[in-house]
Every structure is written in C-alpha cells, then in structure tokens.
Amino acid sequence: MNKAIRTITIACLGAPLFLMAQSSNVTLPQDKGPDKINISAYPAEQQKGYKVFTDKCSKCHTIARPINTTMTAAEWSRYVKRMMHKPNSGISDAQGKTIYEFLAYDQENRKDKNPSAFSKSLSDEEIEKLKAQQH
Image (cartoon, rainbow, N blue to C red; front, top):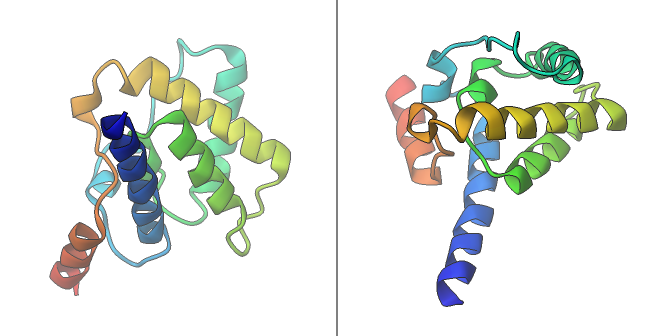
C-alpha cells in the first residue's frame, strides 16, 4: 500500500514539473525528437484527432514535445486541461477532449509498446540545469 501511495505521489508531482517547462523558454530533449507520427494505421477518428492535436498544440510549443513524451492517461488528462487554460490556447472543451483521446490512444498503442524510446517528464532540477546550459 505504501509503495502505491509513493508511486501516485511521485506521478502527481512529476506532471506539474513537466508542465512548468511547457511555458518556459527552454528546449527539452523531447523537442529534438521526431515531430510527426505515422498515423496511417490509426482509426479514422484518431487520425482526425491527430490533426486537431497538431493544429492546436503546435501554437505554443514544438509538436515534438508531446509526441516524444510518455505519460499515464491521468497525466495526459491533467496536461491537456492545463494547456486548455493557457491564455490564447484557443482549445475548446470539445477539442480538448479530442486531443486527450488522441494522446491516450497514441500512448497506449505506440508509446507503451516501446517506452524506452520516449522521454519521461523532467524534474524541476533537470529543467533548471537545462535552462542554465541554454542561457
């Protein structure tokens, strides 16, 4: 039980740190990865979701960032909600739901099959080190 609580606590603390980096002017390792996904085998609904995802999310950060990051479904949900509330995101509730559904599908069907190929969220200390190196 204690291990489960620790795991949940760590996951909940990690997501906000990753999200803090979203609005900063730092380049994350994920930003340097691929900025496209081959979605040709994805269901039509998810292909439509990918278009909404790339159109909306690329307005504020590299699309490579979420493409190359792995999170749990709960973390993706919090991430999308937070991005929806950013000034000028222009993401409606319906678009947010579509983006979340795409990210959750992609996580399960692409990233979970090869998790070592993707980056986890960074700690506050890691983000600060990157900022110091880049300035």
